[in-house]
Image (cartoon, rainbow, N blue to C red):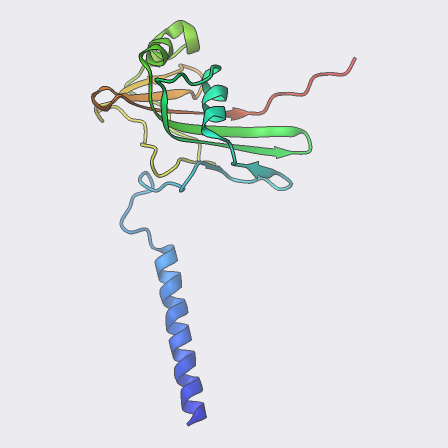
Length: 179
């Protein structure tokens, strides 16, 4: 009798394990483009650490080189930095904002960040995962897409909802040379 219970318990445990593996590896019919990380992430290189605990206002300030105004409503904001012994080596940020008229005006001005309208925005590199709430940048989605011609700064603006999605990524700053 005890042997039968052990066999039954083993079968149940194996079935539960197999079910868990199946659920964790299936993609639910989503294409690669629809998959996204819960928050922004970078693949960690050996010897590096990731920092993801940025307050939304700091993400905004580092992204736009200004503090958010009372009319700028940050809905979501994430920043990830990868760093090692030499300091920050890579960073990425994503934001979802109800922008003030002043912020939107300044971001649309090519003299501020060099952004221009584009119908073919460049995609994120493979080592960066966008958050689940951040849309894939593409034309034909009812959003105005602005991107820097040679840098990854990208904005997607949905005028009907006054909703701005913004993202950027890059490498860390080089250390200064000692005299």
